[in-house]
Length: 369
Image (tube, rainbow, N blue to C red; front, side, top):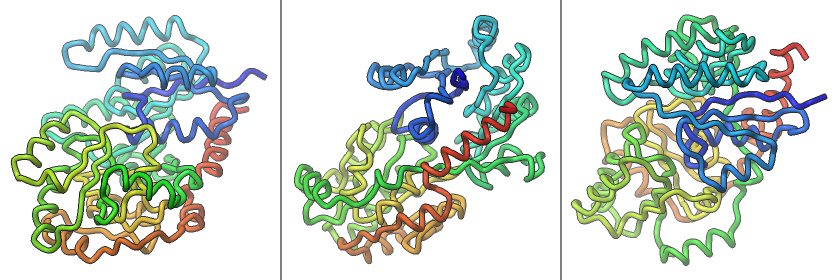
């Protein structure tokens, strides 16, 4: 039997993007003799990632970013694509607003199984974009006939008019072994960055408004009033990175921050940390929160994040109203940590080895094989 080819529609394929990390985690652990993911992406793919995917048999199709000005061109490209590629029985979309167009085209061209996957709990950062997405998301949902979500919060946001029984929760699962504690990696990287004796407060995510990096700077200012043997390790890249770097300089806090940029080995950077923070304004279910707990890190999450991320006793949620509250919690953090959480993560349904098999079964059920 030929493998089933499933068209995954994503904004980007990048290890520092939460959604694409989830998609790639699943794909790495699926049986490629039975399932092949092809990708429709809206951001150019690096040569390295393209090579990795093509070695598994994947095909990557690059679409232009969707903007108000290029909607006619975007729709035509979709029509041309589905006319040319009639081999797909299933499309799995991870971009709710653009789904108004790509799922409409998929339905028009006879793709029977049209999955829309909710990864977030809010439409956008600005009011204008939230209103736009409210309209587009509704159209996208109407063109789908299968509904996935990473959490109850993400489900309630996108599929509020659907019954809970219609929605499948697909956990943002990880390879737990990948994130187990490794002392030699911790020692090597802390020496490299000359932070052996520092309290390392980690954050991993794109530099966008949603991730609330400016609040991290406010926390740092407050923490400096209590102790000064700390550094914030910010892993990732994004449109607001330069703005954040300038804000840190303007506050005279450069010695308390490390900006790593995008990294291909995020699992190693968790090893450097003593505590992980995620003060996001909104999230669906952040995979970095699962990874940090798997690595044994105590975690501070904003109260805007779904309770489903609270997997271990070392996780705590705090309100975003007061940076001093966060600083006070961090001031109490010890540099001695690491408690193995593998069993807890597995029992909570976030073990990719188990969850990938479950997704395979769901795909087979959907197409009646």
